[in-house]
Image 1 (cartoon, rainbow, N blue to C red):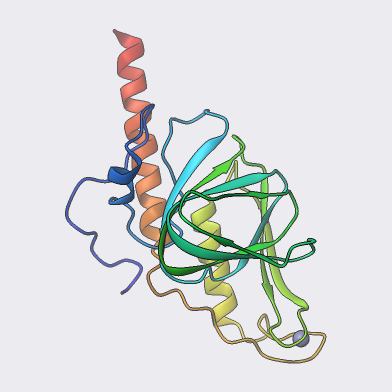
Image 2 (cartoon, rainbow, N blue to C red; image 1 turned 90 degrees about the vertical axis):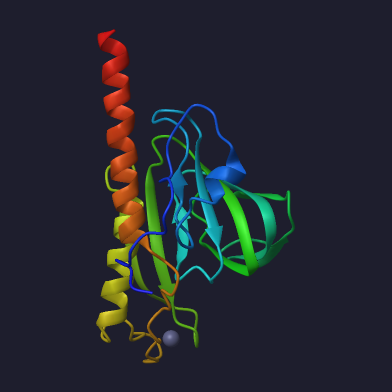
Length: 209
Ligand SMILES: [Zn+2]
């Protein structure tokens, strides 16, 4: 499916003070949406995803995060940490310490809430050599300033379309492009923009009354 494919019929995801999580989960549109489901400014912020495919890169953050696995099973892998991986069952939570790269591999489909500090601080996307584990490409950005989904998408496009970036300068292995099947970050980015607009309009209207 193209990233710009038509959206499924039905209501768009919204931000709000109250949350029906399983209703909201039905409004996710791809894997790793990480849609912010609470009103801006709430700390920690909850980000909702329904994941079916392996995360295309490793992610670390300069602030601690927590993942609550609501349904389904997955494996989360770590680098530079005393644990190599954890297996998550429905209801499990995993604490992600600042600076530890982590990578999700769903076993089927899993619905998750990721809690990030608000503002979330800097995040780092990393791609590693499968042969020698050397970090071959990374992108560090301020997730409080840029919309993360846009940076995720652009970094994957850059990685996939440039063989020089995918070439390990430690062992010369060329990494395969990452699989983005079922990931629709450009649409998610647009939906977040719309949800923020709706939130701001409602807030302005309330203040006027
Ligand atoms: Zn290598």
